[in-house]
Length: 113
Length: 112
Image (cartoon, rainbow over all chains, first blue to last red; front, side, top):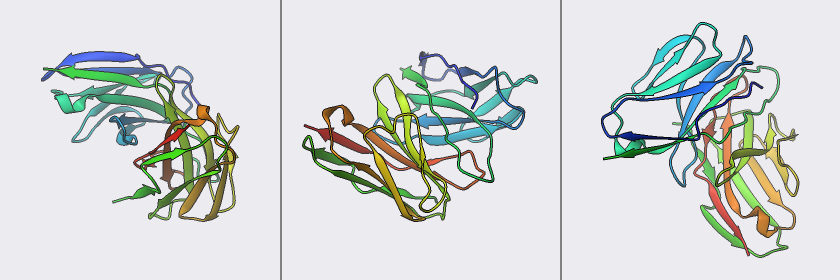
């Protein structure tokens, strides 16, 4: 599985746009990029997934350049409730057998007033 | 909505006890996972299973075993609990061929 690198922590003020970048230099052709959000004392929650270019949903946008060696999670106008740890994962779908997703340490985002 | 439940939110056990953590999912998922999460270390995979009675070791299987007798249930067993197994334990599941995992609420285990 491709190794990912993300900043350990980020700080932001309420109302700002936050961009968290993840590096995955050895991403494979059939790998997807998935981001999760985790609040304290809860399990991670799926935010967004993409393969290339741009994906947007009601929570976030995901930007993936043409070479796919990095990706950026964009959170528009963050609020205090966006304070959480954000994980970037890169993995292939595997229709024949199980696979293991390996979460790293994630990026701890702190939003302050 | 996908629902993954874990048998306990908080558990306190003594060193040397045998501990069972149970996870149940209601979406007919093939794959199920057990992670532990510790401050500064992120999520680490203990074991996963891609079918009934099938299991694969993750990154940190030592001191743990698992059981999957039914598709919806995946149990994590600590044969002889030790204090270094004090942690948050998270169960997850997903369909085969999918890369999105659905997590349970977690069990915070304290071994004294």
